Length: 165
Image 1: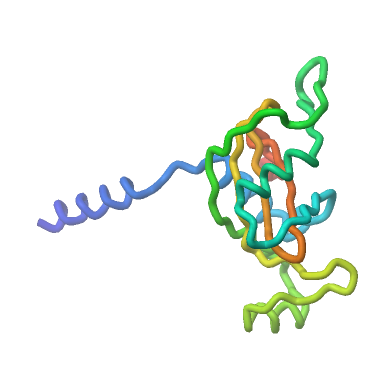
Image 2 (image 1 turned 45 degrees about the vertical axis):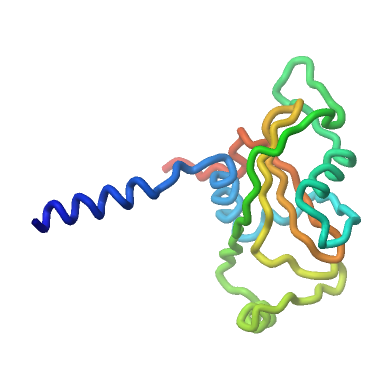
């Protein structure tokens, strides 16, 4: 009786589990950098925070220039066609070993802290959009604030590979 019960419960857990996709892989890669992934080029999309994800993605592709990188010859340009495949909220964790006292205080009260040079310090919640484009699959990370923070990634690339042991 117990064996049958455990088999049924085990089957339920296995049936509920989903296979990690490109968004899951990117989130894991970025989370493993202890917050260093946030450095670098970003797009600021000047739309109200109330705009739909589809409208923001459309604006991203009007502004961003991509290249195929691996193709010979390399192709550079703007996205001319795209289809949104998946949209979901993700948490990209900053596992820094010792956050400063203000980060601890503000996170305790779930507040966003002002940075003297950049405005709001990003929280760990982002909207991830998996998009099929004429440059291949892309993952667009978005976060609403005073402007929309945005960064685009190639969905088929590992960005921060862990060293093999």
